[in-house]
Amino acid sequence: MAYNMKDVFYLDTSIDTTTSTGDGIAILDLSSYVDPIARGRSKGTGLAIYKVHWDVITTSDNAPIGASTTGTFRAGLISFSGIPSFAVGGASIDAGLLKASNDLMISGVDYYAGGTAAGDPAPHVFLEPSKEVPYVVVRDQVLLMVDIPVAMSVAATINLRMECATVTLDQSTLNQLLRTQTV
Image (cartoon, rainbow, N blue to C red; front, side):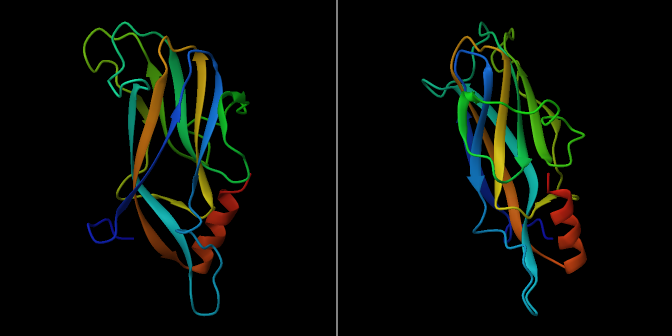
């Protein structure tokens, strides 16, 4: 797995919050980057995610969230398949899914609105992959999930950008990843 300018590319996705509480899910299809089936001499491929960058802005004008804003949320990038996308308020995320001890969790942030200065508070990243040990996805999709327990006073957009590369996998590594990325 090489983290270099030749191999690394960016993928991004986002989800809009509302001014109410609830859970939401946005899907990012990875089927053109991932092939977990080894055929003959060709090996399976996965998507190595090295870094995840988070951003929270107002939905209406792409500005940073104001210091007078209230609300909290937890968001996470999860390696998971078979769930449809839902607008905020339409999903029901299982308790404990958005936590660092979940094997399917790639990256996660907590956001607490109501800072005192421009740019404060930024999302608090509590889990992220690294250049040395990327999270390798072997499923067809990843999900951006958000849980909003305290309603935001303004509608916000949660954005993320992944630094990733397609990697070939030997059969034993591929089998292990397929087992760990199954619910």
